[in-house]
Length: 133
Length: 461
Image (cartoon, rainbow over all chains, first blue to last red; front, side, top):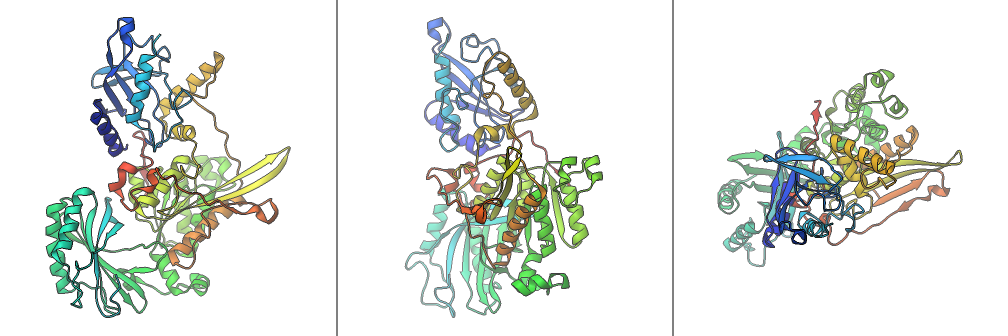
């Protein structure tokens, strides 16, 4: 696992005011804390935590999927939320992965490891959490 | 380094990457930190480094993670054995730089022109112990480690006399002292291995995750029907075959793949790597190691194409990966989706395949979840040719007698004059492959690929 690269990308996020944590126990994941949502229109929270798996071989393999806490009110509203791509438990918290593929035909640019990373994936998560319905 | 040759010494500070494997400390020359006018004393015959130069290099260590070292020349014909002055210098610098760059090796190298070529001695202060340089690899140059390589140089054995007649006795000595890492021990890899061991290479690192299938018997040198029945690891077949050809050739074999850390530990000790797999992650890792650990590589592959019952193309490709060459991403050799599928853990793969099948059932495109990739057609004589060619270029590099005259060679055995092409491709300016050349582990932030956490590797010997 490319700890060094992920640390750098999380550092970039931190500089921009976004906290994200790397968890390497079990399947490696990054948890973005308090990501802004468009939930107020639906009477939902303004922010939510989001989990993103670290793809095996990263950065060679593209970042894919996004997870929300099991039972999250956002799951029925986000793109791919109804298509369960697996359940993960990280630090006692259980997450459900949604079928969201921004770099794999899902609306984003094709994966380029020299331009994309966990720091740029935040943009896709914000867009994902704002396009509800 | 030799600006005051042949009578006087000169020196430069340098920065090194490193990797501490279970058995060795591997160092890579990342860059020189040459002196500025007046920073070395020109008035004395030996090396006299003035304090501003030392302080500049020491303070600069806060800006990078690399090890610091000094390289100096001895006058021509003067062996590169450390003098008492050198002992004093190394004793002082090893402690001085530790104050600025703690937990990093201090490297001291001495270079000298001797009658039989350039010789290099060295020692490294690392975790409170002096380690002596035992092997040196200089890309496309013939440099001996002193005294180790010189003391061990044997004459050519009878079996290698034809090769010695062509390339010289020194070439056979170099081959015997050398290590070649062969990634992939299938049709292409097994041919490369056989060529290398017959040429007298002293040590092979052989890596392959697969076990022999009956369909492999047509291509894999040394394989038997019993191996297919027992699903013997391809690396075990290769090792057994090497022993029957030259029992003196040492083999370290791994059932696994690059860039698993245990495999990388072994591969970075090689003089040359040969890539013989059709796996995209392997190519990416090969180029990454070539760049960061300065191990030159040749990647080779074959494909056989047909149409309407006829064979229309038999293509061999050999790609050179020197540390400064464009990586497979820049050369557009990588399909990201295929790469991701190769690296996926088995549970994820099964889930993706099921999701793709479900999408198709519902009338949607399943490719976002999984794409079935066609298996490349191949045939034994083609893989044998490609493997032997790659081994030949490895022999050229090791002996210093010739180098691959291409960057990316493609040839079609069925086309007039084989339709040979050399694709000269440029690197993207912003690609990570432009950075961290020779930085070894210290350039990990710019690694193009990492080992998936679900990978397991078994070392056989």
